Structures are given as structure tokens and as C-alpha cells.
Length: 194
Image (tube, rainbow, N blue to C red; front, side, top):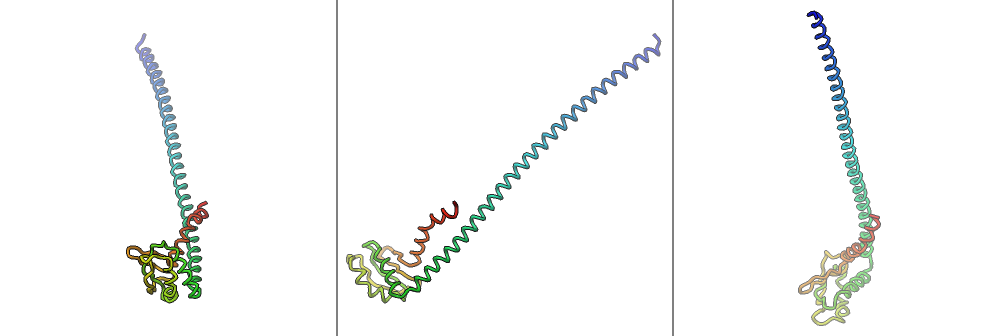
């Protein structure tokens, strides 16, 4: 064999091996590119899922906050309306004739326990009527639980505060209205949050 032929045979073999190596390299590169694209697609899908989850959570949080703000606004509006109703009731009570206001105060005082005597503090407008009613208020009370006197207290709108030796009983109009409002709280909550 001539040197030229050997050389040509070696060159052909090198070309064939190079072509095979290039083909394998292209296949490997294509496989890497496909694997890379699949990984990129997976990462993109994961990122989109995570973004959607975060978006859904944020949407749920904002929607919950909006619902809460709506409930609070409704509660504030209902409280404002209740304030108006109780203010009107208070004003109406204060507008009653003196005898009717005093009669209500006496009823509240009579409802106290039999051992709850002391000094009655009342609005100046009601002092005379309650001073005159002291014998009637003390009628069924022991000597230790009698109402000793009636004193004026301009901070009391209606009703009375009873100051005993070691206690104070609140029989005022404002306390009665507060108790009425508290007793309605459960019903109001049921209306507001049902």
C-alpha cells in the first residue's frame, strides 16, 4: 500500500470518527438543550404556581380585610343609631315631669337589697321629691339599712347613687340605660354578624 493510500485511509477514518463524534456531540447538545428547556419549563411552572398561590392568598387576605372593614362600618353605623335611640330615650326621660322622674328613681331605689342603706345622691331637680319620699323608702328597712339623707349631685342626670358605709349602688338613669344596652348586645350581635 502506498503512503498516499494509507494517508487517505487514515484521513477517511479520522473524518468518519470526527463526524461520528460531532454527531454524538450534537445529540448530547440537543439532549442538554431539551433537558434545560424542560427544567426551565418546570421552573417557570413552579414560579407561576407559587405566584398564583401568593396572589390567591393576598386576594383572600384583602377580601377578608374588606369584609371585616364592612362589618366594622356596619357595626359603627348600628352603634351610632343605637346611640341616637338611647340619647332620645334619655332626653325623653329627663323631659318627664318632676313627679314621674322621682317615681322612677324611687322604683330603682326600692329594687336595691334590703341591707343597702346610706346617703342618696340625686339631681338637684329631684332632691325635694326624694327627700319627701324618704319615710316611704325606709318603711321596710331595718334601722341599719335606712336611707339617711338626700344630697344634691349635679353630675347625676336622673335616678340616684346610694353611698353606703362600704359600697356605692348605682341606680342612675345613665346606669339603667347602660344596663339595657348591654342586655341588648347579644341580640344586636346576632343581627350584625348573622
